Image 1 (cartoon, rainbow, N blue to C red):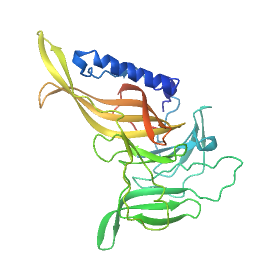
Image 2 (image 1 turned 45 degrees about the vertical axis):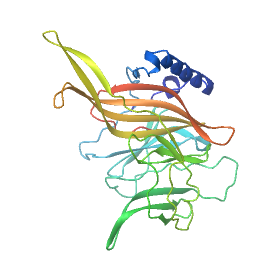
Image 3 (image 1 turned 60 degrees about the horizontal axis):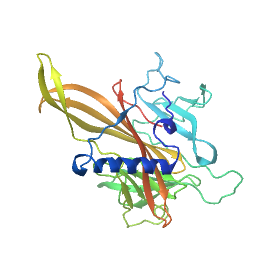
Image 4 (image 1 turned 180 degrees about the horizontal axis):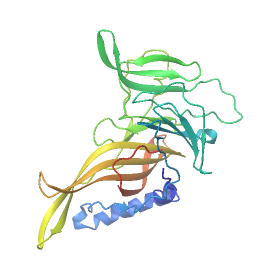
Amino acid sequence: MHRLDVSKHLFYPTTVEAEQAHFQGREGDRQYNGGKPKPLRIERLRRLPAPIAGFESSDWCPTTLYIFVLLNGGHGEPGGRILHANNHGQTALCDTETRTVVCVSDLGMPKGPEPMTFVIPAPALGKKTSTSQTICVSSMYRAVYEQGQGTFCFDTETRQWWHAGDWKLPFYGRGEYVPELETWVGFTPSHPHHLCSSDLAGVATMAVSHRVPTPEHVWEDFTPPSTVMTARFPGNVVRRKRLEWTAENFHMVRLGSGRLCIVKVFYAKEMISSINSIDNYILMVLVGVEVVRGGDGELRMVKHKTKRFVFPGSSINCVL
């Protein structure tokens, strides 16, 4: 487990500085090659910080699945405690601030291969609230003699499920509720899966809704470039090589105050022909963005910094 200070690597100190940096970048494009955009160059993150914890299954109880959940801190903001569980239901609590790991009560029973985990925003301290927290789950479902897709809601106070509608949520994968913006954010269902927002306030009701939610705002956070490079081979042979990006998975971490860390993992392949590759690796792109509400009430995205990291292993388990 590695912990990266994204405020240092992915964000400018203020929103104004981020906007000024991108304005200067656009001005530079206008002066380059008749106003054509410069080739995309992403600053490299050379290495991750040293690991703060490691997880390994015991010989007598092999583990095939690891689940990690980031627990909320004060006032519903992301915290530094991580709950870890395996496919046998054994759990441990890791505190990244104190770098301690303690065992906690096991889960009631072993979980399946695709468990669902939820982070529930806590109410503000000292305030009483009568409203319960609602979670929306969109998935495929199967009933007798029929098959389809739908969205279901779960009330964490009454512990009741209900069917919201025969449609899927407007996100690729999981959406996150951002309380300071009073909206949900996630990735668009279609390629290249940009950041988007959607108002799901009407979904969390007991009545079945026939109105399909759609993304209200779509922002371009990162688009893989079409990269062509020159490579030199033995015998002083020079060939053009092409870098192909294949999306593996996407992650989004809510940082509070409208700031989000977007992590997109790609399988990168350097090709010298349509069938020959010279190098393959896992490429992780980290993007720091900030979603703010303007004077007219509309949401807009401010992009801060983008960095890339070539992952030395074969996969990334999760991003919290």
